[in-house]
Amino acid sequence: MPTARLAQSADLQSILSLFAASEVSRAVEPYKQAAHVWQETIAQPGTYIFVSEENERIAATCMLITAPNLLRGGRRHGFLENVVTHPELQGRGHGRAVVEAALARAWADNCHHVLMQSGREDSRVHTFYERLGFVPGLRVGYVANGPCQ
Image (cartoon, rainbow, N blue to C red; front, side):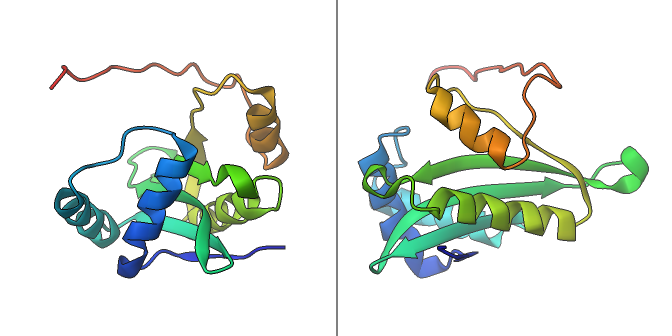
């Protein structure tokens, strides 16, 4: 089974290539701006980017954000974002490896729970998350979109 590791500064180009191949959302451009956002992201306390590799390229990634919480006895919140696996490498355990690494980090950081949302309509995506322990329907998700730029 593939393993996951924390992303490093030098992984930016490979992660941007993964995002482009996966067509998940528009990535930051130009590269200089993306590099600035990347450095800010990896320096942010409580933010972890996990990657899994195959043949010296990043096959999957996800981001875990943990935040302090005055409720739940002070146990942190965890938020899982940007879960992406290269389309050519799906079904090989890379997505599982990065999500399991993120969950392990969340539990080590004393998170009460890890929240995530999926806008995907593909039932296989939902089955994937449910097999990793995510339970649908426990909460209602709301989204407030920022003003158009």
